[in-house]
Image (cartoon, rainbow, N blue to C red; front, side, top):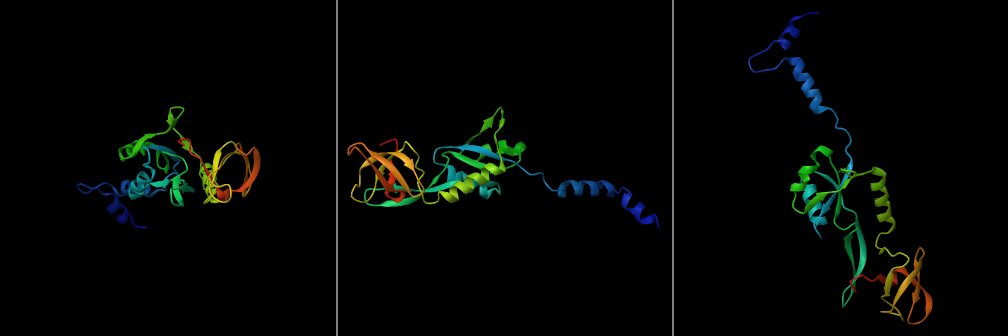
Length: 194
């Protein structure tokens, strides 16, 4: 074998590095990045969707769990999209760069746990996605909630949820002194502000 090509590659020219160093530098920059964790950002009130779009524009992998639920207006009932966790957005981003996300309008802070940015495991993100698939187009109603019947003979009556089954709820209607079964589609959760 000839030594001449090797000598040409390793010779220093003015302003250039030896070929061996360039190869190492190229290897470092093209090496696969380690898998990043999911972290939680706390947003300003009702800014979750704006923050999500700004993060996506920057190329950040973001997850904003959205749940569709019924909302009643004076003339109609409509399905609306609401964040599952108010003021929270999940990002998959390198930990050492997280602080740079605080410069995005609408991002208030990074959520910490034990003095470190809180890490959300991949299986927890998948569990949230599965929950959203199961509960699609259904309001999340739990035992103990107060709901209003939005259609049928008992429309506008409110009751306490005693039990939630797959498609029905068992309600206690105080004013009638009765327990009734009502379809989940016919009840709307009463907000605490009412």
